[in-house]
Length: 153
Ligand code: SF4
Image (cartoon, rainbow, N blue to C red; front, side, top):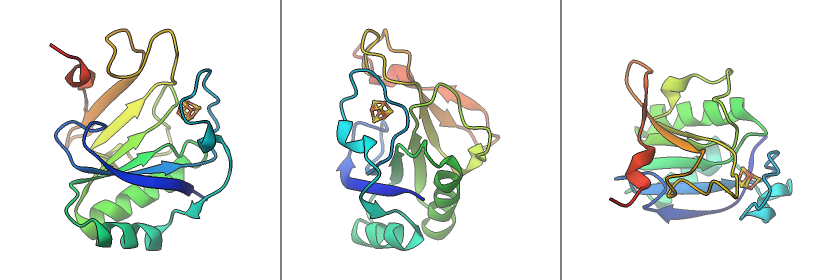
């Protein structure tokens, strides 16, 4: 089961998209220097089809629904992403803290996937030194690395 702490409308997490980003709790990754320690606890509102329908009903102008976390239950992230696509026709994104894409998901349920643990010395996505990657998922399932869009020219 997935739970979320809060949500926000964001513009920077997925380039060129207006995203409703939901911050999912019970993060199992324990990255050193984590900037969101409150997401380690298993608490918050249940994130299911009903909760997502309410959120998208409230923010119908968004172009993308972004799952921030959810590595404690990748299958549920996958199923809810498929629901968002099929029911609302919105793009979907997943910010995972794992270093590879979970084998149990269908990549075609997502338009964007970010992977990579947070490593303090390497920095977040906006740093050229980062280990993290943001991929755009093409219609054939191929991945395009678009991390460079976060870097200042
Ligand atoms: S994945 Fe994100 S929330 Fe989870 S421990 Fe790492 S930095 Fe913190």
